[in-house]
Length: 189
View (spheres, one colour):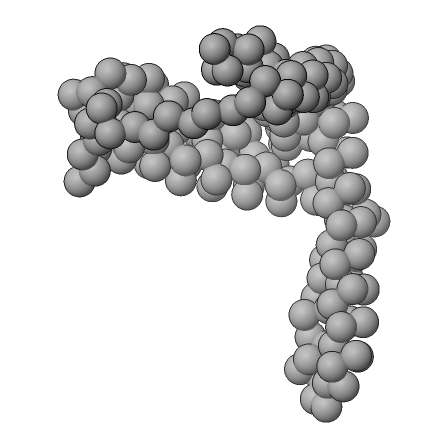
């Protein structure tokens, strides 16, 4: 069990120049993430398609790079090229069949959210009775509900739900960056 005393928390010291740069980039990134997040929530099918195809191209690029490194390492067996082939084939499947890729992403996202929920519940249990334990329990409950909703509609709702969840996540990531950016000046003082 994790026991944290509020007096044991480390305080970081930042200089004014760092805080100014951090604030600027935090605000810019926050606004961009909010715009992309809103776009993803408004047209979730497009967001799902973009994420599926983008992931496919990342897998293909990773496969090509891994194959190149295996070639440079003078891989003497075909097993050295198994991973690159799997990455390239998987990426090509995501690019060529984006609807199936969206369904796969929805299933992976629901498993992630379920694991995140259990992690949130565990951390809330460890933090109890300190301040904030309830928020961590609430976070775990929300992750659990999102996992159940996503899995219950799988695979039919995958094109909508993946884009919607990613859009909402990006929106709140942007919002958090904006709040942190505004608070950067207070950190220096």
